[in-house]
Every structure is written in C-alpha cells, then in structure tokens.
Length: 253
Length: 308
Image (cartoon, rainbow over all chains, first blue to last red; front, side, top):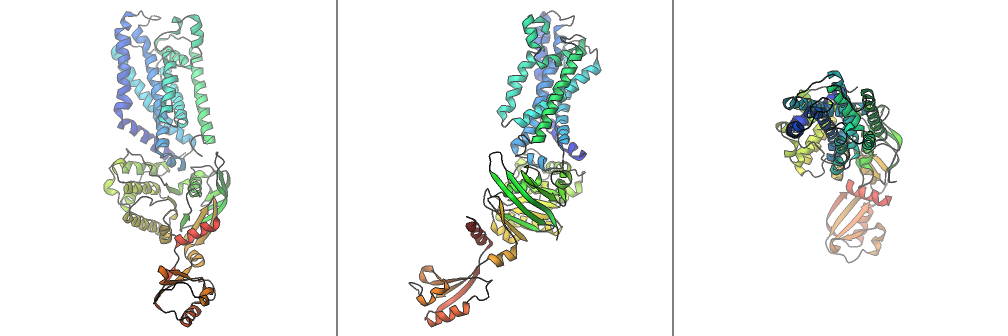
C-alpha cells in the first residue's frame, strides 16, 4: 500500500476544501438553514406533525440527506474531473499508485467533507427545531455508508463527464429530483397508493427512510430494507469503479 | 552499459484504428542522454506515455530497470519522472505544495531538505510560496521539472522540454540536464529543436510513422550520414560548369561565384586533390575555400525524405 500517496492526495483534496471554505462549507450550510427557516419555522409551524414528530423536526433527516447526497456527488466528481480537465491527471496515472489507493484517497476526502458538512447541518438544525436521535450509531452508519456510496457515484460521474455541463447534468436533472421526490419533505404514506408504489422505485426513498428511522424510529420502509438497498448501491458503485479502472474507461487511451 | 529501459515489440493501435506504434524495439542505456526525434504524429509521445503508464499498450512489453511496467508497475513507475509537453499544473497551488505533493504521490516520505535542494537547483526557491498561476511560462516549466524530480527518479522523460521557452532559459535547462546526467540520471528527451539534440544527446533515435528508423551514437550518426561540402569562391563568375568537371557533381551557387563540391567522408578517396588539379587545368581560379559538415537537422530531414 502506498500510504504516502494516499496521504498526499487526501491532504491535497482537503486543502482544496479549506481554501474554498465559503463555497465548500458555508454556502451549503446557509442554503440548508434557509430550508429550516422556511419549511421548519415559517410554514412548518402551520403544518400538523407526522407520526407524532413536528414537521420542522421531521424534515431534518431529509434535508441532511439532501446536502449529503448533493455534496458527496459534487465533491467527488469535481475532485477527479478537475485533474482531467486541467491535464494534471497525467501525474496520477504515471505514479506508483493502485486504483484502490486512488479511490480510497479521492473518495475518502470527498466523504470526509460531506460527513463534516452533514454534522454541521445537524448541529445547525438543533438551533431551529427540537431534535432527538434515537439510534445514534445507526444514524452514523447510514451517514457514512451514504456518503461513501454517493462519493463513489460522484467519482464515476467525474470520470464519465467530459465537460462541466455533464458534470452538472446528473446532479441537477436526476439526483435532486429523486431527493425531493424521495420523501425529504413528506412521508410517502401521504401520497396516493399508486404514487406510493411508483416512489418505491426511487432509490433515495430507502436512504431517507432509514436515516429518518435512526432519528425518530419512524420509517416508510423497514430499516433492514433501507440498509440492504444502501449496501446494494454501494456494491453497484464499487463495481462501476472497478470496471472503469480495469478498462481505463475515459482515463487511459 | 546495460539497458535501463527495454522496449520489445511495442505496438499501439488507438480505438480510432490509428496505429501509433508498430512493434518497436528500443533499449535505452543507463546514464545516457537519449534524444528521440521525429515529426509531429510520429509516435514519440505515445511511446513515452506507454512507458510512463498513461497509455495502455496494445502489444509488446516494456521493462524499466528490469521491472515490467504493467505487472510490476509500482517498482517501474517509482523509477521514472515525466515532464510532459503541456504546461499542466495546479494553478492555485503554491510551488512548494505542488512539488511536495508529487513526492508523496510517488511514495516518498516528506523531505523538506530535498525539496528545497530541487527548488534551489531550478532557481525556484524564491518562488516557493507563489501560486503557480502567478508564474511565467518558463517558471511553470521549471515547476514541472521540479515535480518530476521530486521523487528522485533514475529515469527522466522530457517531452519537448524547451518548447516555448526563451534562449536563455533553454541554455539553463541544457545545463540542468547535463548536471542531472552527472548524478547518474538517465534522460530521454523528445524535441523539435534538432540543435538541442545535437548539443546534448549521447545517442539519437529517429521515429517516423510509428517505427524506429534509426538508433545511433550521435557522433557516429553524424560521421556516417553527415555529408561534407567544399565551397570554392571563384575569382570570376561562371555561367555553367565546364564539361571536363562534370564527373564531380559540382553545383554552382552565389550567382555563379561559388562552386560547391559535396563529398562523402566515409569513402576511401574524396577526390579533392583531383578536383583542385582539374580546376587548375581548366583555368578556374579561386580566392577562398571553406568546408562545411552537414548538421543533425540536415541528416534528420534527409532521413525523413528517404522514408517517404
């Protein structure tokens, strides 16, 4: 294992985050806080609670997932796309590092950033709504698993994208709608039966449901299914990354 | 001297069907400066990129100091430093950070003293805290070299190292390359400046259409393929070459004021004495004479012409 390389890449990526603190941390925290102010305090106070949880508190896990998913994808995709864009990828490809080490360092740094951000948002939310976390270890497990899964997905996206437009395409056109329609702001039980069935094809439902269960003990689907689906996505993303490095897809001619 | 890089039957066909390399074989000797010459699209960069691990070969094998570049890539790559043709750097990093990053990436522990030495040798020390975006093109080129040297490689690839740099910096770089060779580093450079190869290389390789068409010691190459010319400045201009001198293949130049005789130094007889005697017999007098050795550039152009 080339630990010096892992440390070099990880430190380099984390340094980029701290260099762009406003964009990396402050901006997502402010935008999520606005959600709490609007949906939690202003509108939420007029909405009845769901399963005994106030609306403001109910949306906290969904909003954290919203930030976690979008930031994981964005951090990891940008981390690998930028060297491709600037041409500095030559150094990574010519270095004595294995694909596993590359993934550990890039995805590890991106996941670290996303997890730190999620914890900051969690702490911020406590300022607006009363919070309880019934299963803190499960909460951390879902947080870490989801962060790594979507960072891997972002990594794949960053390798696939050959321009900034494609880099934004998937997060904005596919992932964000899936998050909004995946129960971030409501329980899927509130939907008509047909739409409840349709919603079950949305993978994000399982992530949000499991995460919300760790907070309040309420879930749209069983926690076992949520965990199973999260692990399935993780396995799919790992498989994709392994294939990319085996074939050199969009990395090596 | 043994080969530090050994290329066997290396071929590369891109997805488009373009055959960039056609089963080439090449040995680079330990400690030499090897210049790889060839026109644009000849396969120089593809060859370098395969050896460095950036491009996958279609066929064949490459060994760096005995290590296969695919099955034993860690050992092979840790020996190699690459300065690519393009100025690709992390614009917002400082010089110190980017060079230190490269050292770590190649598996070396932190060594501020060594990084300082590299930066000082390349006259980058006073720029160490500057962001790369603020540096001139020549300074960026030095940063690329510093990155390539950061992990103490035994083999250094310089792909067009002096493209776009001014004459002074080019001279500085030549000095630096020679100094590196003195420390035992093997240097492989590609260049469009034939003068650069002529100035620095121990051996020359010429690649064209994906094939190595020649590998030779520079001095031997210039001796074997170099032509010499004898130019005679005449007292009186000639309208045409007299028939009695037709056998020498003379050319008239400078509006008839100069006779040029091209001869081969490799032959037993250059016939210069006979020519001078025949000129005297023909009543042609000259006021001055010069000899000129063909340059590497002329040899290179001739080789490519023959290829066509």
